[in-house]
Structure formats: structure tokens, C-alpha cells
Length: 75
Image 1: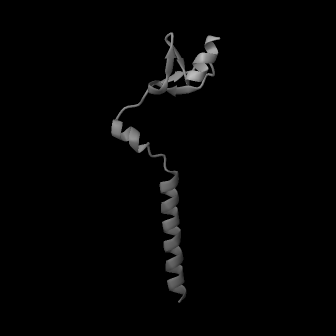
Image 2: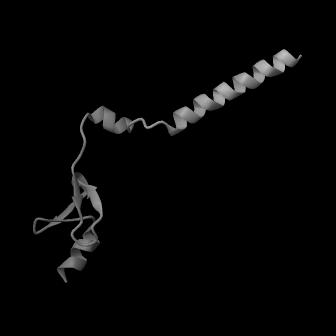
Image 3: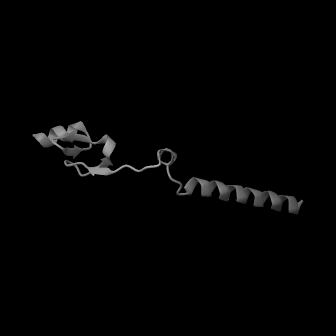
């Protein structure tokens, strides 16, 4: 009976370690793996936050993180 409990306890520990390893592993984002490329980041002229180049709101060739910051910087 003791041997069966020991085997079950070891199995539970192994499964928990495997789950924790999967949860906290530093695997790259699957979407980024599919695209095979990274994207340049631009800094908002108003608040300094970095945003992906595809999300930049550009006014007079200046990068902004959103239209609100572009409007606020123009006044």
C-alpha cells in the first residue's frame, strides 16, 4: 500500500513540474512565429510610450500612440 501511494505522489509531482514548466517557459508568441518577422517600435512624441510601427498615428511625420495625443500635441 505504501509503494502505491509513493508512486501516485511521484506521478503528481512530475505532472505539476511539467505544467509549471509549460506555464512559465519563455516560448515566443505563436503569432510572431507564424509571421516570421518582428516589427519596429516607434516612440510617441507626446507621452513617450513605444508602440508598433503599424499602430502609429502619424501627423506631420511625427509618431503618436493615438489620435488623442496627436491632437493634444498640436495645441
